[in-house]
Length: 471
Image: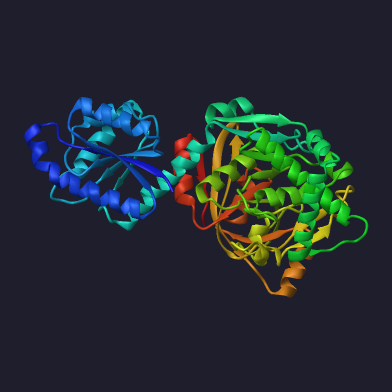
């Protein structure tokens, strides 16, 4: 979960502070216990009743590397203590007030928040009893968002290849990324992947063979002797191993692979590699997800990394392929790559792979290889995308529901687009004209559950405009 710092702000008059100490401690202890029970790590900054104490407490909490700092108001508190603490706290700031009417905690929070408004110090105000489920969920959401945002800073994106097929939305300004998100970009030519994948390395070849056998054992592989052969599948697996090794050597936190047209026309598609990189497992067992965007989509990869850091799960990457108005359902269908985890969203790889088909690549990709086909499992999803409007970032956000249909209906729906590719049939909480008129890219990304609270908080912490859609 997240690391949360808590500083209780008190009255600066000695006799009032001494009278209130027990009351404040009881409220802070209850909040600390509730957050700890929810899985968070709490760092205590103690009670603040002097100007020097405010600065010292804030510096101590900040030095502990907390994701978010809570300034807690159980009683009336001198606002200048908040001002000093905020100045010594560089990270996200939550002002939380007790709603126990026996003491003016709300008054203390409002006075402190107003003072911070006057100097333009960003903060969020929350209130409620220490065991209030809504309050705990809101604090947790802000803390998880802060941890995700903080994890971006100092990270590195590996960009294999350049702009794909003239796709402007797949390319971002590296200066803007480092300034706004703290993310560096390592440019790597796709030839490095080809060179490694074609190297006469017995260990690499043996591991690719193990991967092929694992896929043959657990998924359904449709060899055709031309576009998909065991040799081509192993080539795709060696491409996966090449990305894995480069990422480890160059300390890449997430990546994107251009693929089209050079790899897809002369080597093999990157679909298998991208699926496995985004999966939490391979034939060696459980592994970390390495977020990887198709077509080296930079803003797509950044969105995926933010979602992954919030949820810990794989993140869907898909084209917005088609809208079925008769069903009010979207076909989110990518060119052969969704993480196989989405097939059943199971912790057991075999359960997911049992629903996966590896089909020969279609005519777009003459070099051949396998596309990773499945129908995404049903369930509530959060869909999002970081995109730019007139050079400024925005986060477009909505809820959706992935749906499954009977076999006959599914066959009819996939046949209308590309049946060899993976599909997620999504009912979105936004009218189709609104979505098509305003969505800022051809790629969209999704994670299970309602993660809007974290993403709202993340947008605010990043200074990114939020565009949230709903019917």
